[in-house]
Image (cartoon, rainbow, N blue to C red):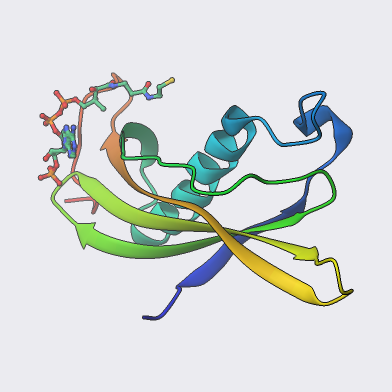
Length: 126
Ligand SMILES: CC(C)(COP(=O)(O)OP(=O)(O)OC[C@H]1O[C@@H](n2cnc3c(N)ncnc32)[C@H](O)[C@@H]1OP(=O)(O)O)[C@@H](O)C(=O)NCCC(=O)NCCS
């Protein structure tokens, strides 16, 4: 399946990790939200808020120094909402000096366009 567009690619630093040297889930969640918003932004110039994040299951750890890539695809464009699939992979140099890519998590994120009062509004201006 097409992995989608690269919305964010970033390197993990000491500030992102716990004393074990693995990255806090919240760091990945924040970037995941940001990456999904980059994708949703393609569909509207309205202000967007994050409405829901479905099923974030971390299947492998991210380590200090890993390059983390956030791939995005639009799943659905509704009346006021955009649903985005975000896939997160970590790239690192493995034990034999070979670059490897590990699937970390994926999630479906829903963004809603809101007006100046914070109420849902159509994605496309009338
Ligand atoms: C976003 C907000 C305005 C939406 O209000 P709401 O009452 O749920 O709005 P609606 O019921 O009209 O739904 C709006 C759209 O979201 C979709 N939606 C609502 N809840 C959803 C959910 N849990 N999962 C998927 N889609 C959802 C609806 O299907 C609708 O989509 P469509 O118009 O494209 O068909 C309101 O919930 C809000 O302000 N939430 C806080 C957002 C925020 O601050 N996020 C950051 C948290 S720190």
